[in-house]
Every structure is written in C-alpha cells, then in structure tokens.
Length: 123
Image (cartoon, rainbow, N blue to C red; front, side, top):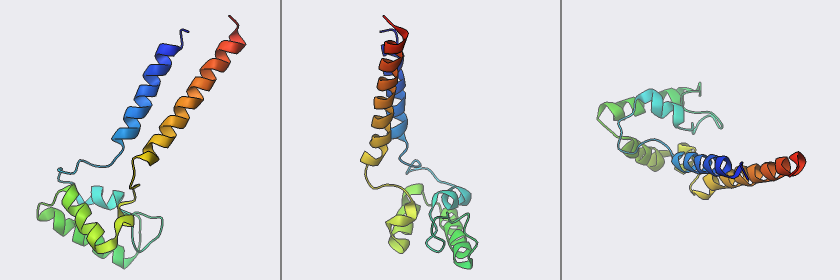
C-alpha cells in the first residue's frame, strides 16, 4: 500500500506531460529555426524542413523567415503552412487520443509493476 501515493503522483505527471505536448504556444513569435525544426518537409519525407537538403526546403526556410520578420505568430505560420502544404506539414496528430494512449499504457504498466512487486515481496 505504500506504493499507491507515489504511483498516483507519477501517473498524474504522465498525464500532465501527455496533455501538454500539443505544440508551441500559438500566440508566441517563434524564430525561423524553431519553425523549421518542428515543421515536416513536404519535399523530403520523414525529415523536418531544417534537416531536408533540397533547394525547395531552403526556399521554404526563407519564406518562413520572411513571415516571421513580418511579425507572424506560431498560429499564423502554422495556418499559412497548412494552407500551402497540407496538415501533414505540422507533423503532429490531429487528435488528443494519440497523446492519451501512451499515458494510459504507462499507467497500466506501473500498476502491474506495483502489484507484482507487492506480490513478490510478501505481505
């Protein structure tokens, strides 16, 4: 029974982390490097705009920098990217359920581990 409180606290942390992992602050003004590092390249599958060596990706990095120089926020830049390249460019799931599944699996695993330790350690 001593492990229930620590387990509950750890589970709470897992859920908070899972729920907060939605992306950048929509109202913040990012740097071009921030946006290029979190935006999936439409030209190099599986790579970010920052990692993609193509000339099209270099052009996109420059266009992102222009938008930021104009004072665009994360939300405005994301909207512009989606309008021009589709939702896949954001590289994040559309539903919060995707964030909750790992948290739920982790919680179940922690409970099973706690019960196993209790059983193996005796009364």
